[in-house]
Image 1: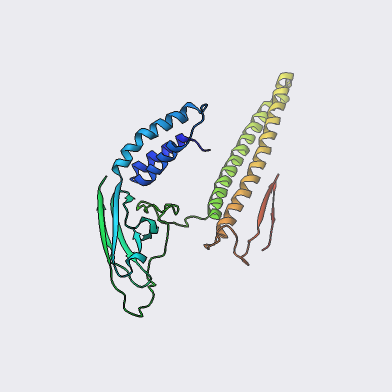
Image 2: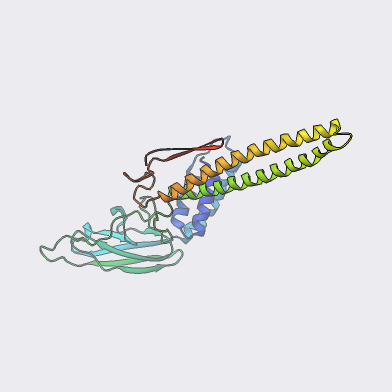
Length: 294
């Protein structure tokens, strides 16, 4: 749900992470949004706070002007932290987060040396890059780093060094498998508890039924109490059966998911031709139904 307070929290988080350019963008989105007269008070408060906090962020943003010299300098593409910048940002101050950044420039046949620059809050700096002349007939460069958006969504802003590389991590199938084993363990544990509870209740009923062997027999209240305990024992036994069924089915499903988890590009779909690729486990009352191709 869109709401200015959400953007305000994001802007403050970006600022604390040192991602001042993104923080300023979030603040500006709040300020530039036209609120209706009947907007909630929280929206209006976020608007006024963003206006106040923006000036502090803007004062900390550093600006870098990259000047490229040499043959074909006008056709050169400037890179910031190995990410190509839009041509419109050449020869103009580029808003950049404070910290250490690497600048370079390249054409299809030539490239400059990399220049590392450490920027402090609010500083303005110029980086000069010299593009060497490529020999006649020089081959096209093929070792240029692959283009990427630097983790900024392709909005042309400088990349951020604190972003983590993408990782496949644990697959959804494996996570579901572990969850299934956990649910199975809980179900089996509850089933065991219900069996013990049913047995204890049944033993108490049997102990009270010993009054039948006495000369006066069991009173009506005693008989009603014994029957109530028997009913409770029956209900608990049914709960045990259901818990064992669900827990067992979940445990088997989890185990199958873990055994059939294959590291591949398409982690969400079973590999073609693999066993158990379309296995389905359906729990029932006192039974487990397994269907699929084996």
